[in-house]
Image (cartoon, rainbow, N blue to C red; front, side, top):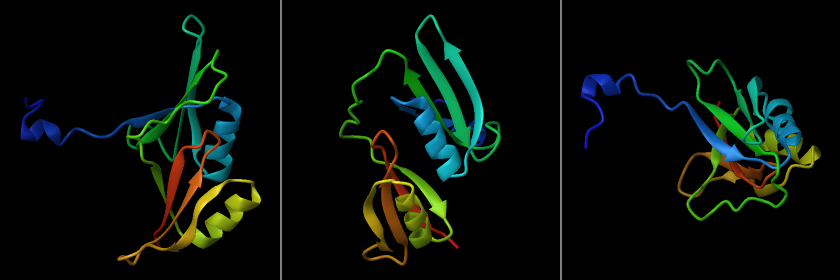
Length: 139
């Protein structure tokens, strides 16, 4: 099934990715203070007992963002499943980024270094809920 003609598909774009978080304030701090994203909007849904927060580097009309969903009654950690991989961020200096994040107590799961069979320098870290984040050095 084809959802749109080729001309219509040129107007498609990725809006956001959603991840579920247990401690909303900690996650907002992680993505805004440590990764420099902006808090774009926050909406509470009291009837359904959850909050959606959108963070990103620019306006949602033109930038892809991350939706942080906090279910108010959730106490146990979420299972990430076997299909989810990671989020990826471009950074100017992956080595310095890892030093700064480690100083903030962020877990570095793959230290900065060259990627095999590539000229890329990468690292992997975890957010407060254990989601993997790839840091890719881009000058």
